[in-house]
Every structure is written in structure tokens, then in C-alpha cells.
Image (tube, rainbow, N blue to C red; front, side, top):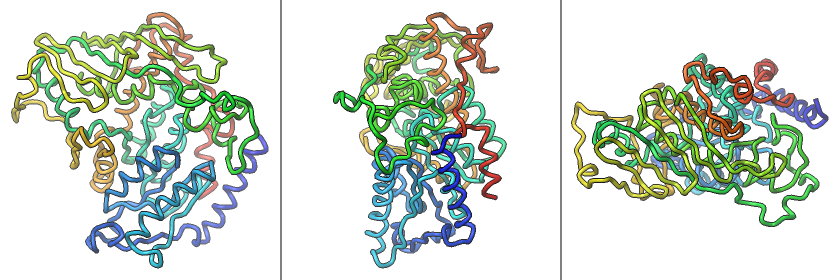
Amino acid sequence: MGRDAVTSRRRFLKTVAAATTGAAVAPYLVRSPAMGLAGTVAPSNRIVYGLIGCGPHGVEWNLPQIFRCPDAQVIAVCDVDEQRMAKGKTRVEEHYSAALGKNEYKGCAAHGDFRELIHRKDIDVVDICTPDHWHVIPAIMAAKAGKHVICEKPLTLTVAEGRKLCDVIRQTDRIFQTSSENRSIDSYIRMCELVRSGRIGKLRHIRVSLPAGNETRGENFDDREVQPVPEGFNYEMWLGQAPLAPYCPARCHGSFRWNLDYSGGRLTDWGAHMIDLAQWGNDTEATGPVEVEGTGKFPPREALFNTAEELDLNYRYANGVTMNVVSRGAAIRFEGSDGWIGFDGWRGPLQASNPAILDSKIGPEEVHLYRPSEVVPRTEGMKGGEHRNFIDCVKAHKPCYAPAETGHRTITIAHIGNIAMQLGRKLRWDPKAERFINDDAANAMLSRQQREPWTIAHIDDWLRQIR
């Protein structure tokens, strides 16, 4: 174990010991007027959140979605970057102090170690908004600690991680939401209902298109140069399970998705949205394809940005449906024996081969998919219903619209696509066993070695230390 990891562990244990005295974990109670209900929601009926990951998506997307829910309350944030952690804390405190008054509000706690936040007894649910390689470990730990979990997509770094996560969620009986707004958007729900109700006849083929490219930061080449780790940034913990690598700004915030050590590029990022819709419309949410092959344009593996810049993948399902995933901009089209339906552009209007398909009424005996209590018009681009659905389901202790198994099965399709492109050959897939058929080299890529001590194997040890 490196010196930074030892220091982190000691700091964690010291914080936990202090918390055990009661002061560090005392609830940050907020009066109900601050929740926007003028006294109608008692503190005992509010779902108490801890946010892990204070990057732009956590602070600028997830926090506003939580703030829209008057029966939810964020009391703690966490980030390994002190500047980001401070931004998250400030955003939470500005929201609640504006509603309650600065003299009344007690403030938001801030942690640099996710284990400290998960240990808190006053938190009901954990919202994980970390880089992709840091999704599963805190999610499993939170579930084992009794918390319900909402976690960003893409859900996992590997197929093996996803299976472990799903098994733990089932064993602990925790509510889990894969944090994607798609299944709360009205046009997407209707599109999949029309497909599954037979409006385009027998489904034959699905065309999925994702954006191309793999770089959103790093045009300034100085950001790619090895530099000293900034003060207040726990880079060793940010790397976590990933291999040791020298620090440079372009490796981390804003562009981690384009490095295979931390994510899977556009295929896992946008694929988590678009392939999920394909799975939903195909009625294959609990399974997956049986075959995959394709090509991808990869930079050298040793490059900083090394995920596929362009891709063209073909999948085949056991029901005969085929799916093509290409990098030509966000779009999806379901093609059947009697027509097609789909959209171009993120939240684009539905289109069909015949306008009558779009105007069709779905009868009471036909397919009606899971509709959350809040269905979001596609035109409301800065609004999603994933947190509202999650909170409702935590209260009722019932499955969310995108439980762990759904998120895992969706991103598995992206993972096996990346494996097929890297190996350069057709692969046969057994979705029940979650293994490739007669291909040891491909199966070896379903998991990765995790760097000590940031491993799934240590989770139970961490939990024993805080009990």
C-alpha cells in the first residue's frame, strides 16, 4: 500500500472515530418551509441524500433535480478535489439557506473520502456522480451499509463489476436507480410502447447512432504534460482501482471518459443512453445479444486519449433482431416489417415511416411501459425524472425504472462491443452465463485487476472498521 493510501486510510479511521462520538454525524435538519412545502413534509418523511462527486454533472445537473423534490434533502457532499467539494457544498448551502434564511440553516457537511459519507447514520441514500471507474465500489459499499443508491451511467467499468453490483443489490434488498433521465422522457416512453405494441410490425433491425470523437478537453497541449498534483487534489484516490499514471490535467476532470483505464469512450458514455432505449424497445432488458462484431478507429493504447474515435458494430439477438451501432451523431431508429419509428438528435421529435404510427392510440390491452410519477416533456432539456422516480421508489420500496440489472445489461452491450473491436473478430456471447463462448482471450477482458487497496475485495474490511 502506498504512502498516500496509508494516509488516506488513517484519515478515514480518525474521522470515523470522531464521528462515533455523535457530533460529526448529527443530522443537519432543515425545516419544511426550506423544502418548498410550507410545513407539509415532516423531517421523518424526507429522504436524506449524500452526494459523492461534485463535478459539473453532480453539481449542475443532479443537485438541481434533487432540489426540485421537496421531500428530499442533501446534507453532505464528497469529492477528492477540495475545490470541487467546496463548490458542491456552496451550491447546497445557497439553495437551502435562500429558502430558510441564513440564520436558520445549519449547513452542509463536506468529506474528502466517500467512506466517511457512507458511514453517516443520518443519510438514507447515496448519489454517486464520480468518474466511471469509481461507480461500483462506493455503490456496493453503500448498499452493504444499508443505503439506497442512485448511480450515474455508464454504470460499470467492466462486465464482472456489473454482475457483482447486481448480486449485492439483490442480496441487500436495497433500491437502486441507474441515473439516466431517458426513461422519464415522454417521447422515448411512447416510442418504445409503439414498437412493442406492434405499430411497425415485427421488429427486425435497430439502428443506433452515437456521437463520434473522443476528446472534449486537451486542445491545450500543456494540459497533457506531466505536472505536479494540484494542492487539495487527492490524485492517488482519484486513480483508485486504475493503474498508477503520472498526473496531467487532461487525464482527469472533463476528459477521463476518453481513456480506457477509466471508461470506454463514446460507446459507454452515449451508448448507456441510446442502447438502453434499444433494449427497452426490443424487450430484452434482462438479457442481451448473442453475437457481436465490428470495427473501431482507436488511437495507440499508450495515448492519453485512446478510446474508439469511430466505430461500426453489429449485434444479433436470439429473437432474430439485429442492431447496428455507429458513430454518426445521436439517433435511433426501430425498423419493422410494417415501417419504422425513431428520432434524430438528443430529444429530437419522433419520426416515422407513416404519420399514422405516431398518432396511434395504444389500447388498454396493449403494452404500457413503466411510467414514473413525473413524465418529462422532451422539450425540457434541463429536466429529468430519475431522482423523482428514485425517491418515490425508496419510499414505497419498489423497483425504479432503471434498476441495477437494467443498467448492467445495457452497458454490458457496450463493453462487449469494445472487446470485439479491440480483438478484431466476431464474438459469440452467452447472455445468461455472461461469458463469451469458447474464447478465453475475450473472457479475460470481462474483468480487470484492481489496484490495491481500492478493490471490491476490501469493501467488507472497510465496513468492519466502521462498525
